[in-house]
Image (cartoon, rainbow, N blue to C red; front, side, top):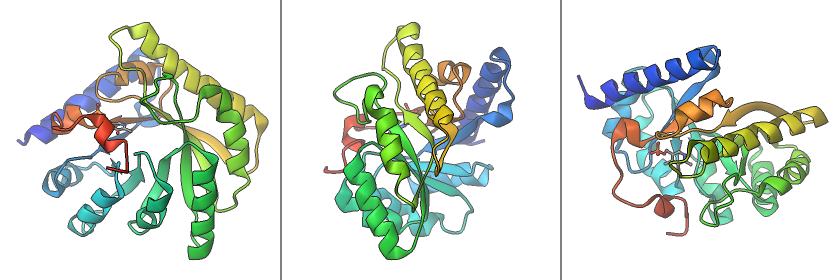
Length: 242
Ligand SMILES: *Cc1c(COP(=O)(O)O)cnc(C)c1O
């Protein structure tokens, strides 16, 4: 059996165990495959094994893999840092959700382009819960305001929040990030904003998915633990400029 398929079943098992510990129904947590640097052939192995949700970080990668993956039904999210000059490109490749909306000018330009193309888009607001300068995302104290502003754009539908937890060996510090995202989600939900549905909490990656699920994640994004180590530093893929 392919290593990728074995890895997926291990991840599914880790997800189930975490749900069990947290008294949650495993159906509440979706698995998104983070496929940056992963070849179309390897992504196909996962899709043929029954996975249905992938996430790419760069417009160029969406383009390069588009034809290869077209024959296999799947859903695609954009999870990387998005420069406004790449919006047009991202909209070309059937992305169903942009998880990384973190600033007003991006949302505004996205709205304008969607208006021009007569399309709509689901998004998550990305929050920088770890307060690391190296990470993208709106700062936690500005997240609610940004959500209110983006909610005004009729072609953009806010479906939840996304974060990348602190990279740390200290469990509590990682959990603080996830707790913070859930707390912001609940605060926003209470506002009952039109055009805002606080359904999804996209948090948890290969190394911290258990903590994220225990803290309320509804979608984990896993790359390394399924497809193996990447050769470039993640900062490379979080910057659309490169
Ligand atoms: C790469 C990436 C992931 C997956 O990270 P792994 O540690 O490889 O599981 C999750 N989210 C985002 C935004 C990513 O860029």
